[in-house]
Image: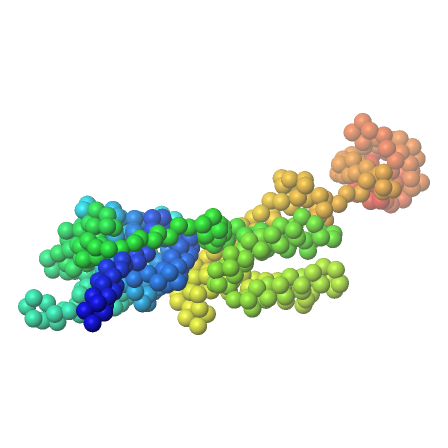
Length: 453
């Protein structure tokens, strides 16, 4: 009996000493499609490996609101505890991500805040409707953490929603913290004082020590080359360029004989556009099939249906719809809930690609474009003498309006001298005697016509 009790005690001690599995991933870059993919992959891996806690290492100045919102939602809904370690910076979208975590620890000297939505072109604040949406997002994220019993025995928010709004809008005033002259940005000490940080720490091990976790193993997410490549091809700038190549290639192919470089460029661009979205599960299969249907209709228009009509228009409409819907799913990840910001980003990227395509086509098909790009288009077709075409000298048309004299009698054809040049001519009315003054009135069928002055 004693031996059995001893064995059970040893088992209990062993279980108690089992190390916690900590999963660490870093968001140390601009928030965008690449960091969103890192977050998805890291959280999936953390779930698969049975991690007990996730630590998000943050050092970012912000980025895309749409992708930050997706990361925020994923962290809020993650079933295990999530801890944010603000290592120097959690600005703008980074502050939203930090606020979504269950606990926040900041390095001494770190900052967190300044979540005003700005224009990516010049950094100017966007109109109030964008700020209103961001205020609501920050407020709801703060409210998600619920309320707790304060030292004065009153029930208060764990993260004050008003403070979260003050990080977005200068008009939000928090007495004792921020007035109407600035947007709120926390230092480490201020964040701790106002319960937006749970402590200070120099490293992840120090955070775990503060949480009372003594035995642990840390697994860190390391992005693969495929993650980086997919992140690159799903960035807004690259997507706009791919849309430019797809649309431009299709247009050039419609104006070329057979299939050649434009169609090859469009097909490669389409693969680079849809494949990354499909691999990460963002673009639905039916969107890819819609694009393929559009391509089939365009091919039928080129090789089967004469002229340009319903088939070609339908094909182009299917292709454009697939490109737009792919972008929508990229930003919202669900067509059942399309928010205004995601729609605006989608339209902006598509129009940017369209404008680039129009500009590229105008240049390639102009006299300034490279000859290799114009070689097979209608603008490059010429009628060469070696191919049996006969050239007509248009030089005499220069003399229309000039005066001269008849060298021979014109009955009605003869010769005239104009500006020192002797040439054949035809009288438009009556006969003209040699030596009479004449005037060139027109040039038709390689012949000048004159009348008496």
